[in-house]
Length: 93
Image (cartoon, rainbow, N blue to C red; front, side, top):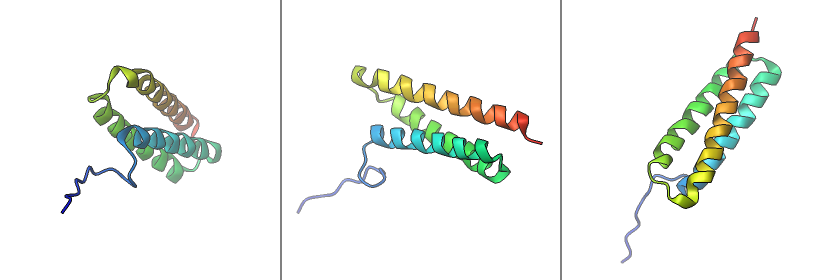
């Protein structure tokens, strides 16, 4: 009988795809939060960034040369998200 190895990946996506989806989710949440300036949404966006950064940190340790450009792009996107959210917090009443 075949043994199933669990990798703790969500929905069968590999780590690369999970990182990409997490960064995209963070971008969307930051955009929504900063458009509405809703404190709850801003906290959720902050958590989404944090979650994406955790995935980034775990992925970056196992990258190949092929993944370096991808990883750098994801890091840049996360930095933009953080900056946008930081600026929104400065504007918050």
